[in-house]
Length: 78
Image (cartoon, rainbow, N blue to C red; front, side, top):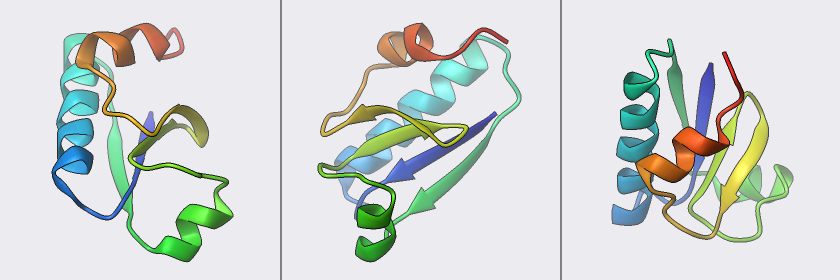
């Protein structure tokens, strides 16, 4: 499973990354993290508010730091 974190690399982006990793570990999911910080790439992905989280290229959270529990609920069944 691929997690993509969109944002500037700020504290909120780092927290979202940590929460995504925690959710994947809690569900025993193999994952990789990609961080997109380039403003043009963020806009091209259709992101209007950061931080944002995509799973396998599907945006599941935008404009907030989703909690570990919220991310676990949003993940597709494996």
